[in-house]
Image (cartoon, rainbow, N blue to C red; front, side, top):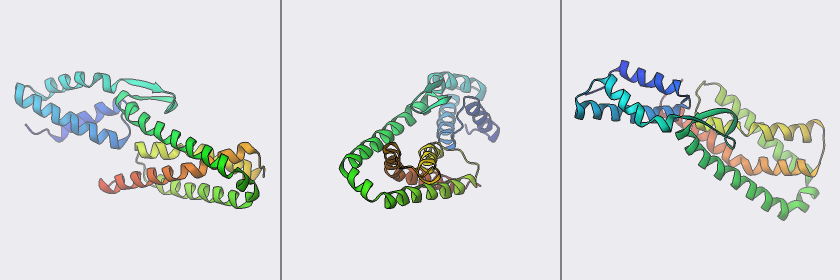
Length: 204
């Protein structure tokens, strides 16, 4: 049995109530829900409401809200989102830390000797980030890629304060600057995936 637009809207609102507000996850979960409900309705000859109750119980653990400090201390997410994003965030942070330490120890002398060039490279990354952020903000579409993209704002802001406002060159500032550079490929990747998602689903 094919689900109606009313049925799909009901599933949509149910997922929103469970804090599934990343649109990429919501579309995927909505599709899974709809397929499982249709199968139960056909095989067990049940109504949409009855099939929905069965399906929602099967997804109870995956949709249970939980906090994960490595993702955010500010809010909880459904367990299925935490599990997926946690893996990406861990890979992201460990990669950036590894690259920063390697480059920091290998080229620390070069950073000091070419400090002005280093500042401009970091500044370029920061300015480009805010340009990309302005592009993202033109559309009110919330995805997991946008969430990860916006996590880059803190180190960029810190660097602008250290380097370009206070005009300092502390070793800590140098370290954060290296983080900004190492992190930038992930920024570009998350921006691209977010924009690709918008284009795929023709979102305004």
